[in-house]
Amino acid sequence: MIATARIGLIAVFVTLGLFFTFVSTAGVIRLPDVFSRAHTASQADTLGAGFTLAAVALTLGWQSATVKTVLLLVFIFVTNPTAAHAIARAAYEEGIEPWTTGDDRR
Amino acid sequence: MSSDPADNDTGGTITRQRPVYTESQVIMTTVKAVIPFVLTYGLFITFHGTGSPGGGFQGGALIASVVLMMAFAFGIESTREWLSNALVVGLGTVGVAIFAGIALVPMALGENFLEYTAYYPVLGDILGLKEYEFVKYGMEAVEIGGIALIVAGVLMGLFFALAAGVTPPNDTTPDTESAADTGAASNTNTMTGDIDTEGANK
Image (cartoon, rainbow over all chains, first blue to last red):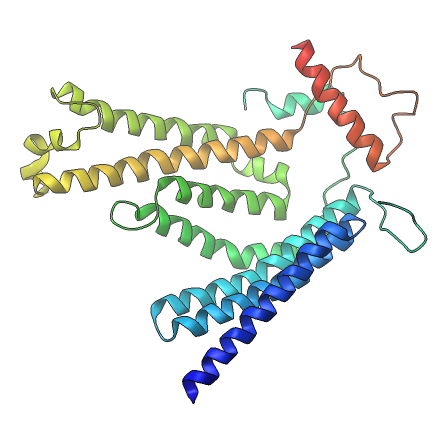
């Protein structure tokens, strides 16, 4: 019973992780300017990596590698949005104007 | 790394207007929180490598990334001043010297290049190690004292050299548009053009 629930949870997490990573990738390719791309790369990708790493931690069970996986998850949650923030901030300071509705850019 | 960045600044030929760097509370806080862990992880990876995954190259890259993060958070110029150029170059130089020393001493003792077991007759009794252990600890010494230092120093130097930017020659004026135009597209155009002509002039 527990084992079945665990495998089901792992499948759900991997599926969600794949979904969010796919959304993030599609966004980076399709969105019009650097700000919206940084936005999708930080938010959707952080969630995708988070779900995937959670699935990995569940698969490994109780051992030292799980602690490392959880640590990795924590650091991705901390650093990934900060990196996107830094990129968007640098782009803004360079004078790149954000894309708005009506603009016809790529 | 050879050209002093201070000289570039006083030349006054940088056409690209860099905005004054303002510190970001978000980035500074995150970097402050993350740096100890990254440095520990870099050392962890550096000290592994003979019997477990890791190595001097990856560890050195992580140690250099600490300096890169600090430069991103607290300003590149202030980090460059805090970490003098001599120290960055010295890291690489000392690394090469240690590597060459460890590698060449066996040749002086009549063995091959990097043959760690040549140290055994000299140091075996002093250190109390067996002959095969010299291979392991010799490799560790090369990785920690040689490769990690070289990679860390070279990566920091490359980063600072890249951050110093290109100083374009005076005779290249961008198109008919005014140079004061701060549009992003024209900036990138002048940048690429300048890089090309600089290569031709030198």
